[in-house]
Amino acid sequence: MDTAFGHIRDWIFDLDNCLYPASAGLFDLIDERMGAYIQRLLSCGPEEARRVQKAHFHVHGTTLAGLMREQSVDPDHFLADVHDISLDRVNANPRLGRALEALPGRKIVFTNGDAPYARRVLERIGIHGHFDGLHDIHANDYRPKPDPHGYELLCDRFGIDPKRALLADDMIQNLAPAKALGMTTIWVDNGSERGNHGFEEGIADHRITDVAEWLESITGTGE
Image (cartoon, rainbow, N blue to C red; front, side):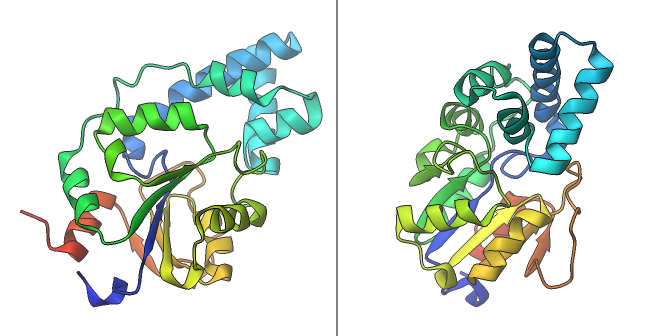
C-alpha cells in the first residue's frame, strides 16, 4: 500500500462517471428519461423541458432537487422512473474488483442517485460485494452533494473520522465539503459534464482519470 494512503480507514466513492467511465454515456440515458418526465409533468415540449432540467441541475445541484423545490415532485416516483434504464453500456471491471479487494478498511458508495439503481450498477460492474455501505439521496434527506448536510449524515451514519477517510468523485465541487471536513480528496477528471465547475487549487489532493488504474498503482495489484 502506498504510504501516502496508509492512514485511510474509509474509502468513499461516488458512483456515476466515477466507478465506471463517463465515456460509457450511461447518464445520457438517464438524462433522456429526465427530459421525458419533465415534458409529461409540465405538459411542455422537449426544448422547454431541457431548459428546466438544466436550470435545476445548475442551480440546485441535481434536477431532482429543483423539481422537488419548485414543482413539488415526489422523489421516489421520479427516481424510479428516470433510473429505469438498460445498463448495457456499462461493462464488468475485474481489475477494479481486484483493486478494491486489496484496499484495507471499509469501502462506501456515496451517490446522488438512489440505492436500487446504485446496486444495479455495482452488480453490473461486478463490484457490489466489495462495498460495506451505500449512502444515497434518500439517506441525504434529498439534499444532494455538494450540500455539506449529506457529508455530515454520511459520517454520523458510518462513524467515519474524516481525517482517516478519502472521497473520490468526478465533480470537483463535490470534493470541497469533504476537504473542509479533513478528508483526503481524489478528483476523477474524466470528462464529466461540469466536472471542473467550481475548480480551485487545493480542493483535490490528487487528480486521476481512472479509478481502477489509480487503485492498482497504490495497492500494487496491477499486472
